[in-house]
Length: 194
Image (cartoon, rainbow, N blue to C red):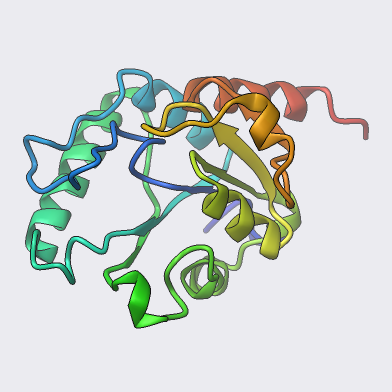
C-alpha cells in the first residue's frame, strides 16, 4: 500500500532529449546514439528518494518519419532504466508523442494530452509537481497545467539567459542541468515553511 494514499502523488515530469540524455540535431536513431548524461542517475535517485514519480513526456517524431521503431525506443528506455537503477532511481512512466508537427495532434508538446494522461494515470497533484526540460515548449507544457517549471541548459540549442527571461511563460527556475534541478528541489523541500 502506498504511503501517499491520503493525498495525490507529486511528480517530476521530464523531457527526454537534452534533459536526461544528449540530444542530436539529426535525431537519436539507435540505442548506441542514446547517450545518457553522467549526472542523470544521481539526479533521478535524489528525486525518487524525495517521493516524486519520475515521468517522461517526450516528442519522438522520428517514429513517424520512419527513422526509428517503437521497439528501438523501448530498448533506449530499457537502457535508461538499467543505468539509473544502481542510484536507486525509478522511471514511473513514459509518454511518447510519435507524430509529426504537421499532424496537429494533442499529444505533441507544447500541447498537453500526454501530460494530462499522466496526471490521470498516477493521480498527480500538479501543484506539488515540476516539469523539467531544455526548451520553451517544455516550459509551456508544464505551465499550462500549473506545474512549477525548471529549464536546464543542456540542450543543443540552449538560448542565453536573457532570452529565456523574455519567454512568456518564463520558467520558474533556470539551472545548469538535471542534477542541479534535483538538488534545488531537495533544498526547497527542506526549507519549505510549515
